[in-house]
Image 1 (tube, rainbow, N blue to C red):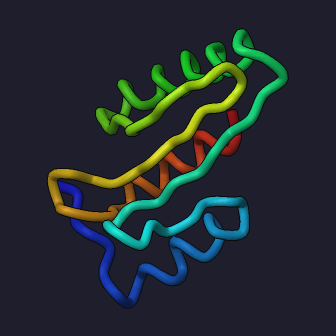
Image 2 (cartoon, rainbow, N blue to C red):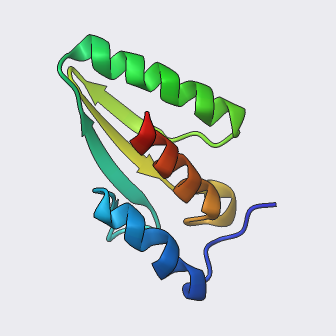
Length: 96
């Protein structure tokens, strides 16, 4: 079972994500990032690839798409905040 990130682990897990553009939300224990693409087709293709990984890992992002932009928020609802699954999915989304 996934657990909420401990205070001891948070910095080492979140700092590299912050360096790649993820931000910690102020109003909840979650991270977010905006991905920008050349056009809608590229954005939607990226979302399709991301959806396959999210389904494979049974960890689904909160996201919104407007034309060439995809806004993503990650948190683990089952634990009430950030978990290692969020960091794993964030790294995967960055690599797609």
